[in-house]
Length: 87
Image (cartoon, rainbow, N blue to C red; front, side):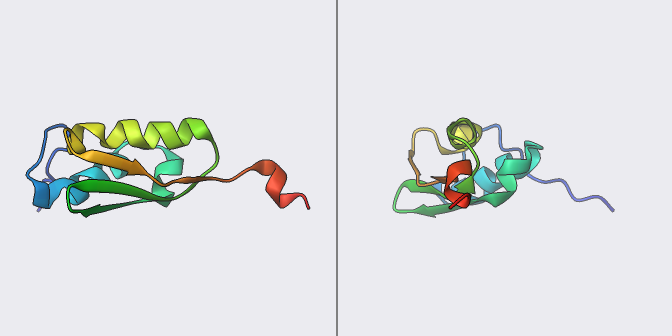
């Protein structure tokens, strides 16, 4: 039997924000989204983890926007620089 997951395309009650934001990232199909964790506390959705570019950092924020609107998104994703691994 197939279990339907809730759609991330609608604004959620506060207690579901974290779950729906994580689903939005998982359902996006983007490889970088696997390394992003969503934490919701006191009206703030925080994105944690590491991505390979500032584009991916912004894309992650955009993907969760529909789940968190009008909640504040605190994007704490770290951008891993290709240069940092060369030394």
